[in-house]
Length: 329
Ligand SMILES: Nc1ncnc2c1ncn2[C@@H]1O[C@H](COP(=O)(O)OP(=O)(O)OP(=O)(O)O)[C@@H](O)[C@H]1O
Image (cartoon, rainbow, N blue to C red):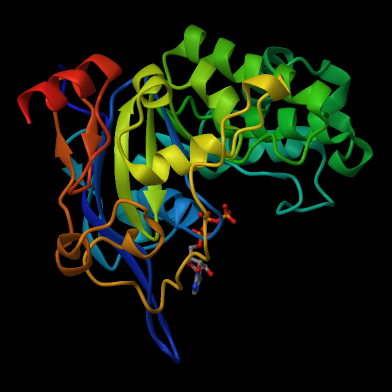
């Protein structure tokens, strides 16, 4: 396997609060290969956005390392980061909301090029036109203001701006969750086409697990600031090994009521990241928890098949394996 495009080594992002450190990201190691789509899932508040922001250095991590192409960028100053910034971009839920409403779409898309001193005004105008074309907006969109656009069109503007500098990694933080269902598929297909055409990699954060199955090469599952499972997308859907992943999957709506799975177990409350349980942080909600789980945090162990799980009592990797395990017991 090639050296990863991006590598996180025990990354931490703790926020100081009056009640003590809030451990939003609490020691995550993972890598993203060039051209790969890594999906990231987990309940609200588990630290997905914080991880995304720390890895593209919108936050300065409080511990661990971020390596881009082997270069340690964890603590680089803003000026030293500049050449790395163009290689990693982010798409937000409503990217235009955060931008200057007085700028035209053309100005918004050209802005990253200007900041990086790329091209002349004329070549930038040409590039904006090409980018608008690429995201399915006509060239006349350049002179309009984003607030006059629909949600789907605004997301296209956000994507054009994100890809203006030809990044190698784009972090997509819930890019479709605010859009009508009919528009969601168009945006996802466009992102897939861009990946096919340019070979860029995505970190894709979403609550839409069924969609992720189709677009992600691998999926990571986060719980209370930790990565509890990571595996090739299909393996994670067909044979999740962490009880928390099983819980997430059991919550996916099934179209055919007759095929609906029983609720795996009562979900209970997610503990506060200000007061993380001892041992395995999922043990307070886990039906399989043993005294070991309460006492000792399980490390993430990855098998030869690339399936990693952090659990003392992982679920069997497939029904046949389960049978073998029973036979050998
Ligand atoms: N700047 C900050 N200061 C203090 N706490 C923060 C800050 N940013 C995030 N948090 C806290 O960190 C935790 C993780 O938040 P984060 O937004 O990363 O979760 P998330 O998994 O992305 O949630 P969602 O799916 O709702 O977007 C939450 O408890 C949140 O309140």
